[in-house]
Length: 359
Image 1 (cartoon, one colour):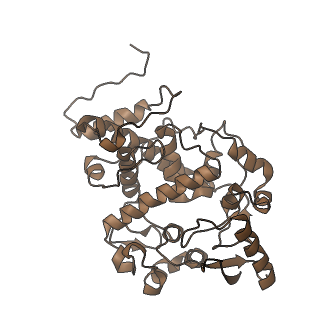
Image 2: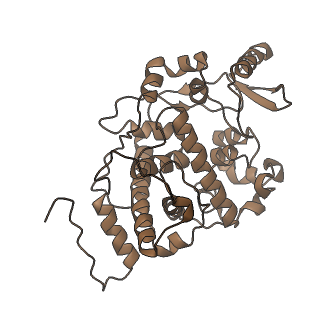
Image 3: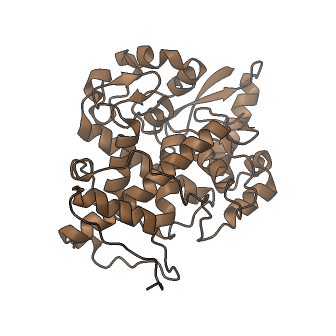
C-alpha cells in the first residue's frame, strides 16, 4: 500500500492511500478530482473517504465503484427499514434499571430516537460488551463500549492512518494506543490514560458515533431519518458498533429487502484509489449483529417504559411529532420482558399484555 500526503487549498493535510506501485501523479490526480468535486468537504479529522460517501456527493467514479444499480436501489429504500426478522430470539444481556439510570447522555434526538431511547441503546451497548471503562483488550477494544480503532479514528481521537495499521495486525491494538503520539488531544484525549476510566468521555464518544453513523446511513440512502424509532434503533446501533458497510450487509439478510450490493469499505484516509470489498458479511458476524439488534430492540422498549413510569416530559421533547403511518410497531415480547426488568422482583406478578385486538 502506497501513501501520499497533499495539502488542500485551506491548508488541511490529507493522506491518500493507494495500491502498491501507485505514482505521485496518479494520487495527485485522484486528490485534485476529489477537491474539485467537493468529495472532501466536511470530512472530520481522522475521517475516512470511500466510494460510498463520495457517491452520495455525486462523484461519478465512486458510483461506478459501487455499481449504479446498487447505489440507486440504496437511494430508493425510502422511509421503511426492512429489518431481519428477530421474533422468537432470546434477548442477550438485557439491561436493568441500574444500567439505564447509570448512563448519562446529552438531551438531543437522533432522527426519531428520543433521548431516553438513546440512553437505553448506549446502556445496552455497554452491557453487551461487558467490560469496565478502565479496561482495554485486543479482543474487546477500549473501555465500556469496546471502542475499536475505526471508531476511535472516526471520532478524531487517534491520528489518521492508525486504524489501518491496527487492522493489519489487531494484536497491536493496545501497544499502539499506549503511545501518546497516537492521540490527537481532541476532547482531552491526550493519551491512553486520559481515556481509560473516563466514563463521561467514552459515553460522549459513543453518542457522537451514533450521530455520525446516522448521517452516513442517510448519505447512502439506507434511511430517510424519519423512520419509526423501533426500526431505526437496531440498525443504528449495529452501524455504530460494526460499521456502516457491515450494517448495510446485515440489512440484506431481511427477506423482503432485496440486494443492496456490496457496501463494505476497503478503508483509507482522506483520499481515493479506494475500492469496496466484495461479498457479504460472514455468517458469524451476522449472528453477532442479530443478537446486538435484538438487545437494541429490548433496550428501546425498556427505555420507553421506564420513561413513562418516571413521568418523562423533558421540555426538549416538547413539540416532537411521532412519524405518521405506523401502527402496531411495539414488539410485545420485548415490552413484557422490559416490564419484568423494571419491576425487578419475581414475587410481584407481571401483567399479561395480550397483542392488540385480542381479548
